[in-house]
Image 1: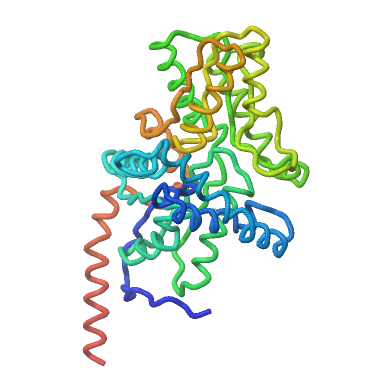
Image 2: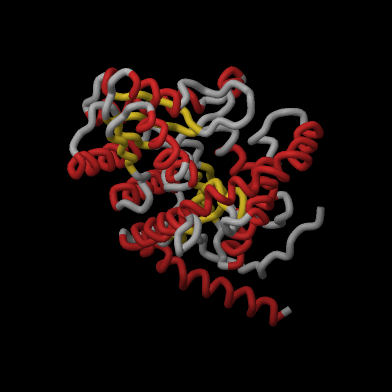
Length: 366
């Protein structure tokens, strides 16, 4: 595998630091052709579907990619905005807000965003950062809870990119922040803000993205980390065990996934006499198809049809100030040891310039 062409090496170059905020991804448009490309990349990842490769590729390309793109395109069209896909819009805004917050607090750190599947890709953004002289990169996944199906796949993309790069930047990876105080406080602030406007409901449902149950038995910590997030959020809000439920959504295929499932739980609550539920999706930091269509539309309809009277979806953290501050705390914690203060960067600049001048003069003498 050939190496990529490197930017010109700068002798004595001062270290430059960047944070790359990585989310799952989204199609470029809500059309069957765009969905086919996106789903082929997403569902073609061995981290996402862990069944024998050849068998799965036959199913994926022979059946799923012939049927599912049109159905998925209609779902995406129902939540598409003039700015584009909500997930991409919110991720881009988060990255810009984090960049501005760090800069305003004296940190010379560049923040960019990338998608594991779709555009802008991780490889593209890493190439851009190298071209801009970045030498240190903190990889910050948008997934608070670690899972091999999501977080590890992001890391795979970096390893794949690095395998073709001659001068690999220093890289650090944030595995999870499911129990980070700044994340929990941001979630609690979102719920409280909703309650201030809508009043407090009798039941708070915390819906996390589902994964096959077998991943739990194979050592994936996702299930446990979701439960810890729910417990910490309930404690922060002062809720007892009868005032909240933890559920898992987004099942795919016939295999057993983590339980309890979100929609059946909502139906059971309505049938038991619960008239109102407030639902939040703590595992999603940006609103997307799974929150805006699957929860705010489909789950709402299921609850109301089963006899519920009032369903309130609480939006994701998105670019709320309390979350941007929380992201900054998480990033700075993992940037520790890398000098990011703007004053330090400016102080090193003359030395870098002199080192380069000395190198050029030495070359001329030779």
